[in-house]
Length: 315
Image (tube, rainbow, N blue to C red):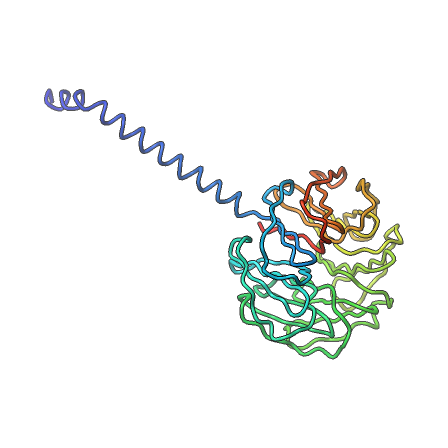
């Protein structure tokens, strides 16, 4: 017993040092893990002349090299890979949002939008183009009985819904067979975007057009309160946020009753996203604005005058 006391007393400083080292290493691992979680959350803004900007906080932005001059229209993330699509069949992929690789789409058509839903990337574009992929690298073309340009795509209630020029709407439950629902849209305006939230689809278009549907088949026209073109939208924090020309921002909790918000700018806004407790909207001439509550917006420095088309947030 005396020997044990002597041993412990003699080596107490060593035991203390070892304990302190274990605590320090544990904290370092925790800090590293937390930092990785923050770094993995990324906004990506895409636009003309191969523009790609990234930000972790929606405030400070970094330009990335896309190695293309094509108009990049949209970004999505799934299965551990970012995918950006654009004009002339452009598809780029990246594992980190910084280093981008060109992929073959097997088409030269302009690609206008992309979503990752139901474990699949879905791309739409000019002349009724539809491409699908599970990994963002190998792509399959789907047949669509239309030559109209498709601008919007989203998934919900076990169905894909695409929209585009002249009131075009197509739906599919399996990505192989697409049904033409254009006659039910009740309009021939150009649709710019399709979004899904609160168990309903919203088709956004020219002249303040908003139509809603729960199944993609039957559509109802809604009063948006604006005649400006509506070009982008999201559903976040139990509300829809929609942006459009002349700095338009409108919001709704149900997709039916809309309230106009003040953006503080007159520039055309093209896309909006939400993440890390901040809203981010992008538009023409390098415009980026952000908001903590969706009501009060602040102009940010993008470092570019290129036109943005969309902004995406990967959680």
